[in-house]
Image 1 (cartoon, rainbow, N blue to C red):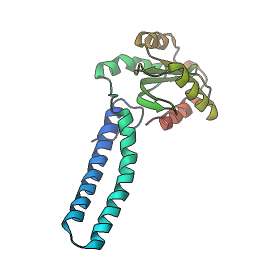
Image 2 (image 1 turned 120 degrees about the horizontal axis):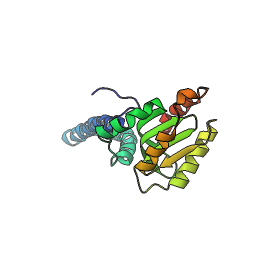
Image 3 (image 1 turned 90 degrees about the vertical axis):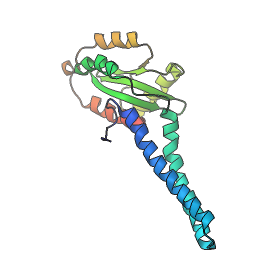
Image 4 (image 1 turned 135 degrees about the vertical axis):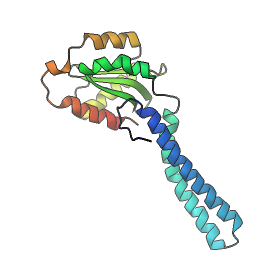
Length: 189
């Protein structure tokens, strides 16, 4: 399994496979410890195996929680990626992001970072766009970035917005686009 960085096409599926591998490994370890516990007559070994199983279960839960939140969102097909690829000339594009706020999980297939703003194509119809936008913008402002993030749930609207953008190279580069990308990666699973 080749390692993929956040923001690269296919990251969501990679994230799931990687988490499933580690969860499976830990579940096997817990199973082995439980078998040891029930097959041995040594009291100290019984207690030790239970303690070890509990200590493994805690990180297992920490691995499983983000996986449960992301499980239903898949990486879009390759044709979608090919449709978005031309926009990489106009903006810094991140793929397969799952932004989290205190109230919602926002699956973003495409995140375009441009000097005029950040445009996110959201695929979850259940997301409260206005509230999520406001919370993400407050977070960006706290990180000393412009609170100019827009969540767009309709592909045609997102496509029109991307078409209307001038290439980012025509604007003065102050490093904020790269900083915004790193900040958004930290806000993502």
